[in-house]
Image (cartoon, rainbow, N blue to C red):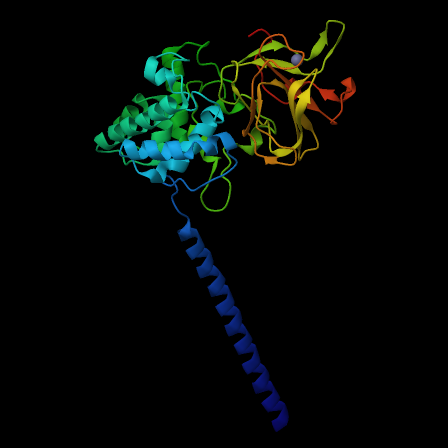
Length: 362
Ligand SMILES: [Zn+2]
C-alpha cells in the first residue's frame, strides 16, 4: 500500500517536471521567434555584396571608387553603383550608366567609360543634395535610386506627400506621370507588372538594381512570382517586335525577333543554367538557358556574350547584348522558347504563349 502511494507521488512529480520542461521549450521557441523578427533589418541604406555582375562591371570598380572619392561621396556606395551599372548596361562600354541623356539631353553623347562614370556619380551627388534639402524626406539609397530612374520631380512629389519612397508610391507616381505626359510611344508598358498603367520609367528600379546585391545572405527577387514564369529579355527597355513566330519565306521562323537598339542589354528570361554559349554560322553569338520548368530559352545574333556554359543565372541578369552576328540582316534579338535544346521546328514554342509582347511591327 505504502509502496503504491510512493509510486503515485513519484509519477506525479515526473509529470510535473515533464510539463515544466515542455513549458520552457515553448517559451524559448517563442522568444527566439520574436527576437528573430525584431532582427529584421532595414537594408534601404546598405549596398551589401555584389551578386551576379559581369566581369566588365567588376573591372570598373576601381574607377567608380575613385570617382566617388573625387566627388566627395562615401565609397561605401561603390557596390550600389556597380549594381546600378549592371542594371543600366551590363557594363557595356562606353556609356555604362546610360547617362548621356542626363548630361547632353540625347543618347550617344558620352564617348568614354570615364565620362559615363563621372556623370553617373554626379547624378548621385545632385540627387543626394536634393533629398537632403527636403525637410520631410530622409535620405536612403533606395530613394536615391528611384529618383535617379524617375528624375528629380519624384523626390519633390514625395516631399509634398510627406512620405518616403516605397514601391507602391513609385507605382502611383509612374501611373500619374504616364497619364500626365500621355505619350504612349515614349512610355509604353512592356512588363506585365506595369498592368498597362505604370508606364513611366521603371517603378521597380530599386528591386531591379538590388537583385545584383546581397544583404542578408539571400538574393532579393524583384519579380512577383504570380505574374508568369518568363519575362521579356528587355524588361526595362522600349523595343519592337519585328518578326513573329510563324511561317516565313517558306519555312518556320522558330522564334520571335525583337529590336531595342544595337548593343542593348539582353537579359535572362527566367532563372536557369547556361547550356550553350558559342558562335554559330546561322545563329551568330548564341546563348541557350535551361530553366527549372524544363523549358529552354535561346538568344541569338548577340553582339556580346556574357555567359559561360555551366553558370547559373537569375531572371533579368544580363547575358549579352543585341547584335547583328550570324545570318542576320540588321541588329536584332532572335528569341526562342523550346521544349528541347535542339533545332527541330516541333520543339519550338511561340514565345507569345508565355510573354505579353507588343504586336508585330509595333
Ligand atoms: Zn528571328
